[in-house]
Image (cartoon, rainbow, N blue to C red; front, side):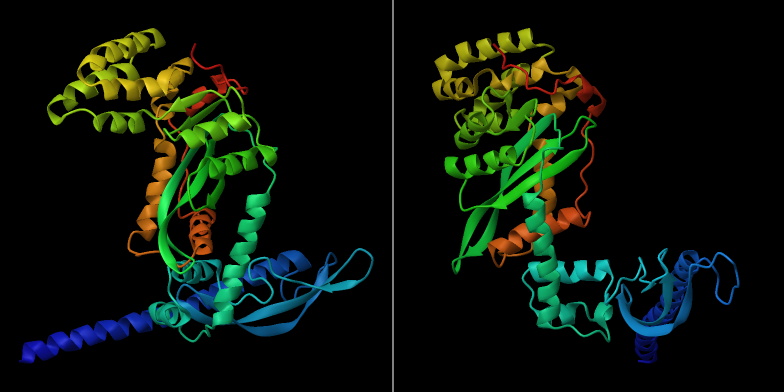
Amino acid sequence: MGQQYRAKGRKEEGLWGLDLLTDALRERIGEMIITIVNEEVAEVVGAVRYGRTGGRRGYRHGTKERQLTTGVGVTEIRMPRARLVCPDGQEEEWHSRFVRRYQRRCVSVDAALLGAYLSGANSRRIKGALSPLLRGSPLSRSTISRIVGRLQELFTRWRKRSLAETSVRVLYLDAIALRVRIANKVVSAPVLVALGVSAQGQKVVLDLELLTSESTVAWEGFVQGLGDRGLQRPSLCVIDGSKALRAAVEATWPGMAVQRCCVHKLRNLERYVPRHALEQMRAEYHRITEADCLESARQAYQGFIVKWKKVVPKAAQSLEEAGEELLTVYRFPKALWKVLRTTNAIERLHEEFRRRVKTQGSLPDAQSAELLFFGLLMSGQVLLRRVRGWRHLSQVPEVGVQKAA
């Protein structure tokens, strides 16, 4: 019994110790904020506190009490005030770059609140879940609405931004299906995504939009929107087997070089081949997609058609449907073949997004789905790394190459 009491006491002591540590951290953070801001004032004014110099550009005049919510809760700080003398002799109030006017929360706190809200939590649940973060800080519906409103404004401007100065050598187009509540019913809706790769190998999300389907009209509007905003013609477009998407690319950029995703096509072939012949079919298919040169790939392609047209005609027909767009990658530098022959670059982006929403049954509405995706990108929670072999992208012409003859 005594051991149980001692264990319980240690547990409670640990909990209280955590609170004491948090309080101590909060005090230290307040001191650090004031130190940083005082250094900023000294640099702008041109003199340290109580300093007398001839090059002074302003003067301090007291402090103002502020509350700032950081990662360890609400911190009380006394913000210094100062007035600056302009070249024309007029005076203006100084404003800090680090702690903006009327700012009550750090950006990381707003991001946490926004993420919880877009995940479907209401104000009461957010306050309960983030109580250590918000301790002593008021949270109302209007607070959440303002945060969401700012992100919505950023997203609207982002979707309307000009792409005239954006040059991409490779364009990946694909969609991710999400369960979203639309018109009082949970449905599976696609988010269309355009991912570009610059000449330096850097990935950049050009646009995203949630629609009700992946129809020809939907894809044409999405791809045409990229062209209307000034996106220069890419050298290569990597897509899956969607006929609607293929038609949309052709309508926007006639004669565009297109690479069909080899993984998607293999999955289609597997639908027609019996289990006992799968390994053989895969091996012969990989002779096409992993050949050493275009000529070897063509020979493997023709051999596949001849053989499987006799044993599994539908498999041969499926391969013929893709045609030489499976082989377009061979006209590019060899170091880029692995990156360009599949849509894996954009699929990895989708996987990161799925990981964040997999615990939810559905998203509350279409706007939340778009904002959640956008918020993850803007906050840096989804990292976009350079593609492999990116140094060879400089060898890819800016104007799209011709399709394999």
